[in-house]
Image (spheres, rainbow, N blue to C red):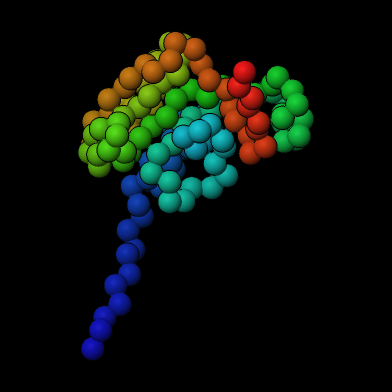
Length: 139
């Protein structure tokens, strides 16, 4: 007779996402390309957007305006190209000014999840939020 196995354990990525949302309310989780995440799911990597105190605007207003949230960096929980494993995560930071805020997140995650977080500055300037209808032309 065959048996059915059900996993009742919450994936680490979801626990990490919940922890960040609870402990750092000024951070909005995003995809690795800088698009906001509406709910936690199967993603293994998280981008970080600076939550703005500015009034919310519609997606169409964002597409055609300059106002976008800052894309601070990406936390890789599992990515062989970047050297991220289940116990050694990689945090890529966009913008020198974002090193300290993201280092605080890394310290909190190290303590709570008993993982090592390697922080790398990959761009001197902060990136911008990307939206589903973004079109970026290259010349």
